[in-house]
Length: 211
Image 1: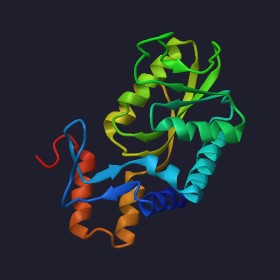
Image 2 (image 1 turned 180 degrees about the vertical axis):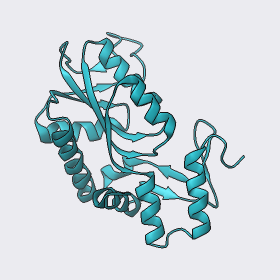
Image 3 (image 1 turned 90 degrees about the vertical axis):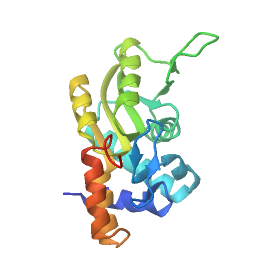
């Protein structure tokens, strides 16, 4: 069951086309997976009122779920601007995590100042399989930070991600998710009943879908 706020966030993502649904003409991800949904939360940055709404929702989630946060971390690249907005609003230090260490200079993977033992909340734009998000968590832990949780704008709700986060011991909270998006699309008549079953089948076995 989707909460009211999950649907409201889903509506904002659809409104600015940060999420597109196309069951009939699927997208192809970098991994080669075929997908009836495409999510690009970078688009939110270009719409000041929607950006402000998402920032407020992220801040509320950090404040309510992880009140002990001492540092906000953004994950490169799309998590960086949203993380910086959150850190600014909450008046907390901000760091960001590169996908791999820089090849010159200091060779940093984490940019900014992280003190050993500081409690970190990671901000991510999107959780799919969880792989890149959890690589950022490992980098923060390796540098002595204590990751107390992760907050993302959207989550596909894959079982593989849920299991990976559990195994890594990282609680996470997303503003909206695939189920809320599908429920909203059905309510608004954006997709047909046939397409709804297609969309639900994809979530269950994304790597096999469309083959």
